[in-house]
Image 1 (spheres, rainbow, N blue to C red):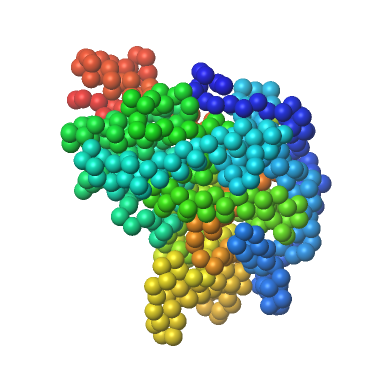
Image 2: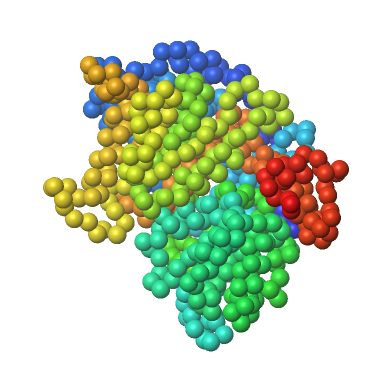
Length: 564
């Protein structure tokens, strides 16, 4: 127990720790596969060559797991490259490290330097459909996760049965989730993706930005008397979250309501928020589950359980669990997360592509790419190895994207004909969620959506020759397609876990720590310094911070933030 940080910790086995340590000195550019792939990248597979993209290739270059197909015939790879990528996976111990992570090895660390020194056990919170494995270092989190789910099930059942109601005896109809970063992006993406499955008469809303207009817009029009507020902060002291919580508490007080009968907490056990005098219920999160990997923990589960119902929440966890198991497969052609990770490394490190567009052809996934930006860029935007040495190779790419087909009318021009090569990962579904559609010009809307998705992959790969240079398409723009039957809770869980595993695999291969985020700390530190000037001016109109902080004071002055 790390009481000073209010986190629940678990001892890790020294055997797993030692086994993991041997991979920390396995530098990417020293692997044999690195040199082999470098040579192959001199003449990558030409998708525009006659017969290069054949029906046999399209049908054969396909992997499957947990209800999701990965089509990769439009990547610039052939059997030789795929074999070299298999050797890269083996040489780096990618799957072996994934298994060590799941068992509870301390992988969130930098050898020889102060670091978080934590296990990485987001997979344990969905490993709840069988008995706890006593021999595993992950057993404590697995058991705690089951316990929290049971607490949540009891709470949701009491809501459904009318046992937990407001002061007037009315049921709660709305829930506001207050959190930032991983406490907002992943949970929000999942809820929006699955809003078609929400319980009738219930709605979920989100407040994340410390911008007061965000909170004001969310509160406007809500019946606060019938609203729950779920505040998510592991430490119980996240500045943006605490600020928004107090703003919302003030609104409840002004409405004549007692906040303690409406507010829920998701926090670390023993944190300042673990306080029954201020919160109707508290649910616990653990220090071995990082924010960007926490959507299937209580961070997302409380809100999803309220909005979608407990059975649908379990389906999300089952889908994630199924993909977690698929990620243990050593054969890259039978392991979609690992294959997607390796294709990304091929494009980024060997073909020189700086960015990756993730393009869901589903409006329900409108915030999924935003979640993946955090999951990928906060995890793998690193510049030192796990031994603290400067990287001699590229780490994570820039992630961006928007849903199709809207994006086709925005930035696809650059993807097709721009000077930068932008690999793409398309996400689509064979059937719509609601099933409400009609035939226009002999095709349904869903068929139009799917046809556009597949056409983009084909067009990017093959390009087009034309006598008019302005209408030429170079082709050889790599892409992959992820397809499932329908966006269901199970499929969403599997898709989430696929990308989590992809990010983790790439971090293992690059030999970086994908589980800390030191890069966000400096800006927070400097913001605190600037806030001290605001506070000083409020307390003393004659205050000046120029002597103590010349740069910060000058910046406030130049920005017009100081009184005239």
